[in-house]
Length: 322
Image (tube, one colour):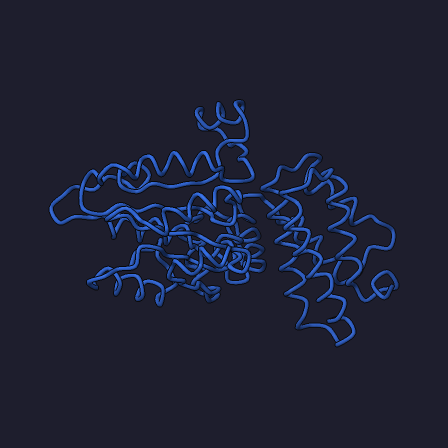
């Protein structure tokens, strides 16, 4: 197994047994928390699915029989950045127009073989009307077409979609597997950044890589100090604002909230029962904040202060006791 397929042995066993069988199900849900490698699995699995003996196969990104739906650039300026190879912002959802354009392509036969794979990354981001449109394809799939839906929160997916798919669950990787994945994907990391990335990973290579890519080492150290000692004079929260920057983008905010959440998780084993109650409450509020941040137009500085204040409320100080 290649390095890009680290972990998830059971998922691979289920998938390969299905490919080898006589009647493979046409719809697959790859379910688990974000950052576990479900999208990477989907791409590698799709490549195995469409491959034909003796037929040269192009890379997944350029394969005519592997179609992927994901949010488009947020606007024309962001599309221009994409075309220039620069970082760019995405829309917050996958539109019904994208699904309908996909369905028009499904009226043709696969190009290089007998099978075609459709990857949706992620189905959590489908607009309601897009889900309804997709249902038509799941109910009457074109011959030779197979759907792989990456899903981060299975409970939010419509039962009508779940009932038409085989669900494969993805679980957090072991610490050693996360370490291997991080070393493979980012071998250039310095010791401090690598240590911080592994500390907040929680079994998720994606979370570790997001942390590393966003250079959140200073912020994570401040998270840990606030949780342990509180921040009665607001100085640590001020330093946190400097560490995250004046205008952090959505990706940086999301990675910071995840790092804060995992800092709270890591503190649970070191505190008494009273402190655990506070940490669990803060954890729940950070999870809620992570869900709200991509939807609402929060002021970045206020959002940074909110993260710091939540962590301070978990500390064994008068601020936390309140």
